[in-house]
Length: 153
Image 1 (cartoon, rainbow, N blue to C red):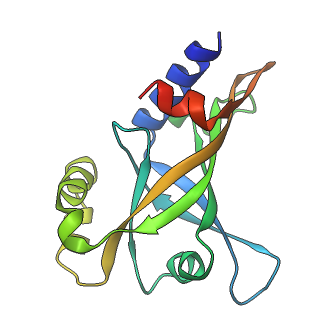
Image 2: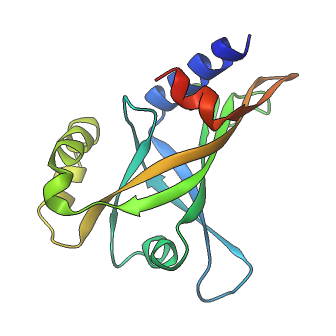
């Protein structure tokens, strides 16, 4: 059952396009800061963001790299019983030359990202997942541990 939950959660991520990124606010200490971002689910189980150094969430991550990323089932966005996943993890900014493959994959999934790839202030931030909260539907709720998450990659 738990392996199925991991596979379902990863499938939800593969289908997802928009997530709510929550970071720890620099300007309002102790408060979370939420913003919408595009994301890419990698084969190794990590998630990556392609974000600008100018964005508030990037400034927050530069100071404290802990975050949560929440994705809702795309075809049930307004439904209370929609599947959803929240990933808890730590993000690391990758040097541009080490992330060209991820940038290409990002641009392949999100055509509008091509314009950002040409700008010098956009970088890949790769998220190492620590724990996952997956709600598959009513009464189907799981905490998935790091070992489970990466075991199924």
